[in-house]
Length: 381
Image (cartoon, rainbow, N blue to C red; front, side, top):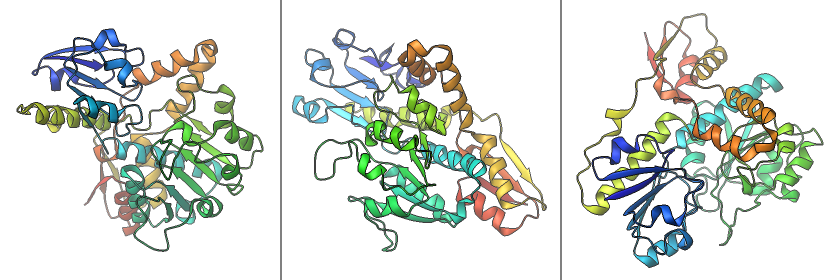
């Protein structure tokens, strides 16, 4: 079995090496000639999987190590009898923690306390649902808009325009769709971006075209809202002007924790084994590296906000990725797409909150509640 795999799929050799020959290729430039004699194709979101790529190939099974699948023509695959699988939810915790890190940084820069804010979540799928759970566990009031998965609590359910008007922090977690009853392309267009209350924060870690980037730039130039962007229109050729106006800008890495990437590889490995009726011998827990920072201890004098900030930034501080993007593009402004993709390809190892064990010694109950609410493993001693 010949398996062609995006070079950015971690541990592809470890998971798939026992099933056949694994050939690693750059996903952005993958073409029909490279997959012509392949039996299996493994991709990430930068590869468009469609008739043009596969029409004359031997590919029998395609898998994307991603949660989203807007880059895959699933209808065409089904008509051709080509199996397909992806990894829904594999990076949900990673994206949630990106959002929580961004909010934590902005709370310090803008001078607000998270528990005093109303957070609007647009899209209650794998990511939005988990973000909602963590925020509510931390005592944060949330509003939810999702025509496909409405909030369980009546007081949470709001129409999109109402959410934009009422929320202090707005976080987008929708797939990118162009058709159907609820298309999300430019879901936030000029009119809806204009509804966002002055002083509010907009975070997009879903797909770039969900937000009209030109309209967002025009609003940001008024300097009355704050934006965090991990995803952009025209990736990888992103707008440097827009980057200059966002508070935090990163190169589509919100879901790039080590756990998320290995989880994604493991999920499509399991799917491939099921499809071909093969035994799945590799287990995710057996190949996950031990984190460098394994524990953190707080004593009785720590305040809840201090504890969460210390723990959160010890694991992940989104400013590192923001600085890397800005510095790299400043040095190579003439090569934006190359720099953007290189930062993704060479992304430094980042772990999830669950990798950190937090020990509490005689702390107040609110410290434990807040840390557990945001996903840390807490041991009270």
